[in-house]
Each structure stands twice: as C-alpha cells, then as structure tokens.
Image 1 (tube, rainbow, N blue to C red):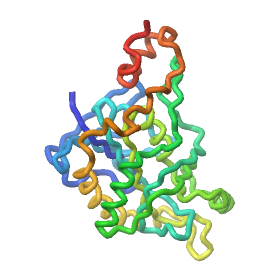
Image 2 (image 1 turned 90 degrees about the horizontal axis):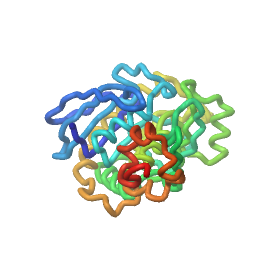
Image 3 (image 1 turned 30 degrees about the vertical axis):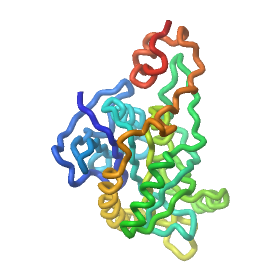
Image 4 (image 1 turned 180 degrees about the horizontal axis):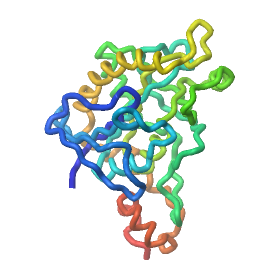
Amino acid sequence: MEYAEIGIIGGSGFYDLEGLEEAHAVRLKTPFGAPSEKLMLGKLQGRSVAFLSRHGHGHYLNPSEVNYRANLFALKMLKVEYLLSITAVGSLKEELKPGELVIPDQYVDQTYKREKTFFENGLVAHVSMADPTCTALAQLAFRLAKEAGLAVHLGGTYCNMEGPQFSSRAESLANRYMGHSLIGMTQAVEAKLTRELEMCFLPLAFVTDYDCWHQNEEPVTVEMVISNLKKGTTEIKKLLPLIIRELPRDRASCPCAGALANAFITAAPMIPEKTYKKLELIIGKYIKSRI
C-alpha cells in the first residue's frame, strides 16, 4: 500500500505541486466514492507527500460538487497525519488585503448541500470543533512565512458560504457585521472531516479580493480572482517546502492526534457490522470489535 505522511489539497489556481521527487499518480477507491482527481505522490524535502487538486485538473467541480469525504478518506488511506489545505478567499476586513496570506483559526459553516461527517448509519460521534485548526502548525507556518518575507496574518474567522455564486452586497455586509474575517466556499467541511480523521489541519488562505462590500473596490469577479491567484500560487509554492521541512517528526503530544478519544456515544454492540467495516480505518484503534 502506498504511504504519505503529509497531504496537500490545492484549491483554485493550484492544480499541481512542483518539485515533487519520485512523483507518481494513484487512483484510490473509498467507501464514500471517488476523490476529485488522482492523487500525486512523491517526496518533498525528504518527506512523503500526497497532493490532491480539490476541484480537479481544469477546475471542473464547483465547491458544492466536491466529494470532501472521499478526498479526505483517500488521504487517510495513505496514512496522512498532516493536512495542508490551500484556498482562495475574499477579505471582509480592510487590513486583510488582496495578495496577502491568512492562516484562519475559526470557521462559520453556512453550507447546506454537503456531507460533513463520516459518522452515520448506526454510529454517532461528536468531535470537538472548539479549536478546528492545529495551533502548533499555524504558529510554525506563520513564522516561516514572515521569515520568507510574505505578508501574512495569523488567526481570523473563515465564513464558508455555499456558492458557487459570489455574495450579494447585503450578504457581504452582513458577514462583516458578524465580525468574520474571510469569505470562502470550501474549507470548513475539510476542517470538520480532518478533525474526525485525527489529522493536524493547517489552512492557508490567500486573499484575492474584497468580496463586494468595499466601496472603493470593484466587486469580485473570476477575472480578478485569477489575476491575483497567480501571485498567491507562486508565493505559497515557495512556502510549502519550508513548512514541510520543519514539520515535527512525532506528533504524539498534539491533541489533534487523539481527537476521537472521547467522541463516541454509540455502544459498540449497537454498531452495525457494515458500518464498522466501512469505518474501521478511523475507529479501529478505539473500538476493536462490536462485541
């Protein structure tokens, strides 16, 4: 079986990973369907890495069509422990300027069309999302980005809208009034599923626009996003090897690694055999059998 310690999900404008040694593609089947694309495996900074394009090469999946569970479960099948999620976002705050990198630490999920948990069909688990990102990784990435000369901000709330339409002006102003920092269409569900998989989650959000609230700026367009993404993609690709090189070799002390320890509420004998087999990869270290 293939193996990767580190997973990277690339968003809009980020469809491949440069500098990957021993690169080869694998296509995995998961109990939750097919991932967005083949996964590209290889070595970066001497560490085993798996890269996945969230929207597929050519960007043919809109944010609501992405099979987030299949994407994340496929990475779990590869034994990924660290997940770096890259996304393009709109800014809801004056100080978060287009062209800058934000490492959010909170999410508000406004989506309603997506599957958001692996636990269903006779098995209930309530994982804590109080701190949805890995604090240690966020601090590491922030330090390295600053040292590399990037304009970067640590912390902030990412509001996850459904999409694929951009916000109305009223929605944009309402989200600002609520105190949110960023508006995007993808990362909140990834944060939830990654926590259920006990991976360390590091979000890297590149600001491409001011949504449509800013009176002195044009409302966001695809052309605007793509133009600003070119700069962001270049900067993030330079940052990734720096982060990967310094990722801890051992994360046993990280709370992310034990996120499921006290999450299960269903009695083991009540778990249907089919559900147990489907989720054994996730739950096996806590629930050895249904008896």
